[in-house]
Amino acid sequence: MSLKRCVSALSLVALLAVAGGTAQAAEYPSERGPVQVTSLLSGLVNPWGMAFLPDLQGLLITERPGRLRLVSLQGVLSAPVGGVPRVYAKGQGGLLDVALSPEFTQDRWVYLSYAEGGDGQYAGTAVGRGRLSADNSQLEDFEVIFRQQPKLSSGVHFGSRLVFDRDGYLFITLGENNQRPTAQDLGKLQGKVVRLHPDGRVPSDNPFVGRQGARAEIWSYGHRNPQGAALNPWTGQLWTHEHGPRGGDEINIPQAGKNYGWPLATHGVNYSFLPIPETQGKTVAGTEPPYYVWAKSPAISGMAFYDGQRFAGWQHNLFIGALVGQALIRLELRGDTVVHEERLLEDLDARIRDVRQGPDGYLYVLTDAADGQLLRLSLQAQ
Image (cartoon, rainbow, N blue to C red; front, top):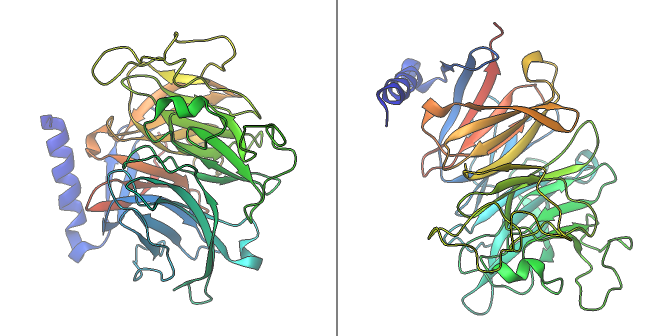
C-alpha cells in the first residue's frame, strides 16, 4: 500500500471511531469536486447486492454466505431475514443479487439470485422469489422460478445480476461456469442473458422460442461472467458488463438473439498469458463487439446509472465497481457514448462489489470483504 493510501485509510478509520462508532465522513478527490464517503455500516460478510425499499424504509443487502439483511438509511442492521433458500457458499458462489418486483408496493415480491448445489459436485445459478412479510422479517412462500441448466460450476462464474425492464420482464445474467464453449451452446444456459416473466414463464417473443436445440429462456449469448447489469434510465435499454480473462472486461447492450463473442472473440488472454484456445481475434464476424472495453481488467462488478437531481456533476454518468482495481469507475456519457473515464476512491483500498443510486439521490457502495461496509457517497461541488 502506498504512503498516500496508508494515510487516507488511517484517516478514515480514525474518523469512523469518533463518537463511539457514529458514522463520520472522509473526503476523496475527484475531477468533479471532493467525494464525501460516509461509512453507514461495517461488519457485513462479503456483501454482494442491494435493493432499496420504497418510502425510504432502507435497503435489503445480501451476504454471500447466505444471509439477507435489512439496513436502515441510518445504518441500523437487522437480524437475518428468514425464509432465504439454502445456498452453495463455495468459491464465488453463495447468495448473490437481490431485486424488488416492479409492483412491490402491491405484491411485496423480493427476488434473489444465488448459487445452488446439485446432486453431484457441481452448482449453478438459481433465482427465486418470496413475499417480504409486513414486519420485513421474513420471506414467505419462497419459490424457485429459474434454474441454470445443466449445473457445471465448481465454484466460479455464476454471474449474476437481476434487472426488470419497463415492460416488467426479468433479465438474469449468467456466467459460463468457467466452461468456455458453453457460452456458444444454445442448448445450455451458461454464458447467457435470459429474459423471463416475473413468475418464471418464458415470453413468447423471446428470440429462440421454437428453435430446436435452443433454450427458449435465452435473450443473448456469448457472455463470460456478467456481474453488472442496469437499465439505462434515458433509453430503457438493458446494459450489462462482464469479466474478461486477463484483460478484456467489457460493457455490452444486449440485443435479442445476438452473440457477444465469448470465447471466440475477446480482448484478453488466459491467466497463464497464453491465448484463449477458442479465440479467433478481438472481433469475429457474426459476433457483436463490446460497447466499451478495458485492455487491463479492473475486475468489474455492480453498475448504476446516475439520473438523480441531488448532484448535477454526476448527471448522465455510469458508475461501476472494481474488485482488483479497487476503485469506483465513473464513466461520463454523451448519449450512449462514453466520452471520459475517471477512477474514484482508489485511496479507499477496498474491493467495490456493488453500487446503486439511492432514492435520496446519494450513491451507495458495498465493499467486498469479510468485514464489508455500506458506504454513502456525496459530491461536494467545487
